[in-house]
Image 1 (cartoon, protein in one colour):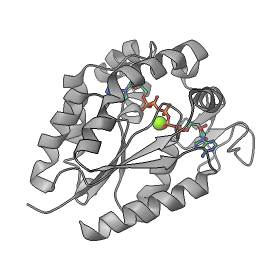
Image 2 (cartoon, rainbow, N blue to C red):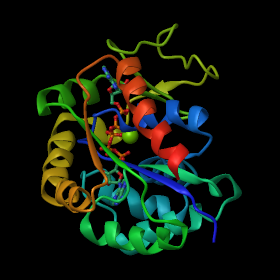
Image 3 (cartoon, protein in one colour):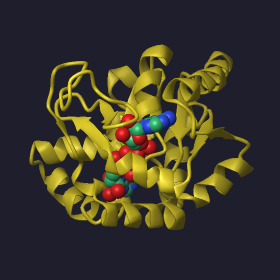
Amino acid sequence: MNRRTFFVLLGVPGAGKGTQAKLLEDRLGIPQISTGDIFRYNLKNETELGILAKSYMDKGELVPDEVTIRMVEDRLTQPDAKGGAILDGFPRNLVQAQAFDKITEPYGGVSLVPLIHISDEEAMRRITGRRVCRSCGAVYHVEFNKPKVADVCDLDGGELYQRNDDKPDTVRNRLYVYYKQTSPLIGYYFAKELLVELDGNRPIDQVQDELMGLLGERDAVA
Ligand code: AP5
Ligand code: MG
């Protein structure tokens, strides 16, 4: 079986996982796989999966593992993932991480796990000002990463909207769920010598440059 490159981005909601993954896909030639984006796409198209996911997402809770793992497994069979993928928002607990190890084992396993650090206050500031393109999913911020024209996507002219789960109360619960369920993955990947830590409290391009340095190196080794 061919070796593939799998990068797992970790960090609290708002750390910049989606922002960085979107920039990395072109530069590394492997796709971003964001489970949150796939759930939102299904919701927009009113599929059964989307309707199920909504009931969890609106509260900031995790969608059940079985559904999520199967969805990622399916996504990885698509041709654009034949060289690997940048995982954004998955795995999100130990059950998902162990399942992902099994899924990726034939391809050499997880390659590297960058953890992007920001404070909870910064997370709240970023998420409550976030705007997302309705058609392509590009991410903006009303203050830190403004589109050229207010409420219009620079890339495809799509309408920018505020995510339903970006209200302060829901964000606080997402942070709580992160600390309770996702943060144990820091130790999990540290023990596997796959964890690298980055300061996310810097401009987007600086974080991107550091990530490219780390991932580009590992990509060349894989
Ligand atoms: P998901 O969509 O994954 O949301 P999240 O993990 O809460 O992460 P965010 O998308 O909020 O943050 P991000 O790190 O991507 O930040 P971004 O780049 O947008 O999940 C949503 C829900 O789906 C979950 O709550 C759950 O219900 C469900 N779900 C998803 N995956 C699941 C799974 N595996 N299992 C079960 N359920 C699952 O940046 C944030 C803002 O900051 C933007 O406005 C951006 O412009 C700005 N910004 C980014 N970087 C910088 C910077 N360096 N400086 C200044 N501003 C910046
Ligand atoms: Mg995201």
